[in-house]
Image 1 (cartoon, helix red, strand yellow):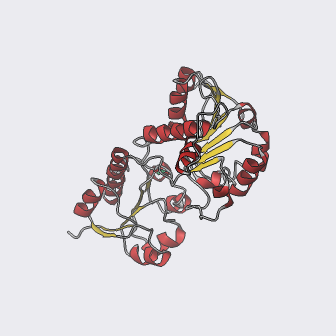
Image 2: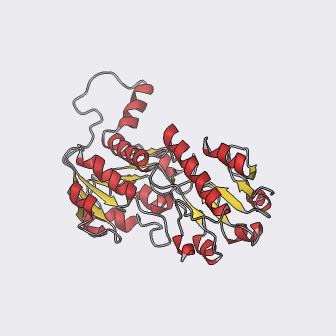
Image 3: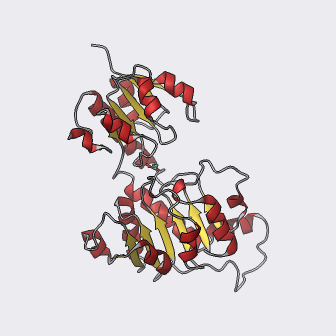
Length: 328
Ligand code: DGY
C-alpha cells in the first residue's frame, strides 16, 4: 500500500521528524526560513496531511490547493491562529496542536521576562558592555520589586495558571481576567488568585502578563486605552502572540511614561524590523519568540505533532485536537 503524502513546512526536531519520515511519504521544506507562499501551494497539492509551523498560514487557499483528500493539519505549536480552523472544521479536517508539554517552559520564560524587566537585566548588561560601569552607585539602574507586587494575568489557561504558580512563590498578589474560567477555579483558589474584570486588572496590577489566544476579539487588546488605564510603573509581559498588542500604541505608552516597561517574546510583525521605533527604546526587552525553546520541550512538541499527524491520516481521533467539533 502506498504511503500517505504529507507536506512538512519546515524541519522539526527529533524524534518527531524521524517518526514522520518513517511513516509517510514526506516532502520537507529544508530551509531555515519558512517556505514562500507559492512553494506551500505547490507542496501541499495532492497531500493527505500537512505538518505546519506557526510561521506558515494554512488558510482556505492552501486547503483548496491540497485538494479534497486532505485529512489532517498538524500544527507544531500550541497556538493555532495561523490555521483557518473554521474552514478546516467545515471540511471535517481535524487540526492538531501541541498543548501541555510546553506549559512549564513557557511559564518559566514569562516569569524570566518579568524578572528581567523588573530588574533591568538587559539594560545592566548593555551598560557593562558599553564600558559605562565606573563604580557602585546608590541610584544606578533602580528597578521594581517583585515580591509582594500585584501580577495581573490576562488569560488563565494552562500557561496563565503556570505563571500564577510561579508568582505565588514570590508572594505576589495575583489577579486574573478570563471569561472562560470561574472565580472558584481550583487552581485560582489554590494560588489565591482573584478573578477581576480586565479594567480592574489593568488598573491594579504592577505586572500584566498576557496569556490569551489571538482571535479577532483579542487583536490589539492592548491599545492606547488599555495602556492609559495601567499604572505608570506597570510592566507588560507578552509571551502569547504579537498582535495582542498594538505596537504603535505600546511605543507611545513606553515613550510618554503611561507604562514603565515591556518585555516581549512575541511582536507584530515577526520578526520585528531593526528600524522599528520600539527597538530605539531603553525600557523594553524584545526576544525572538523563544518562550517554549528548550531542548526537551521542542522534542516533546515534535512527538505530539507527529502523533497528531499520524492519527489524522489513519482516521483516528487526534490526541490533541484544536477543533474537536469535527468529532461531533
Ligand atoms: C506556540 O506553541 O504556540 C508557541 O508560540 C511556540 O512554541
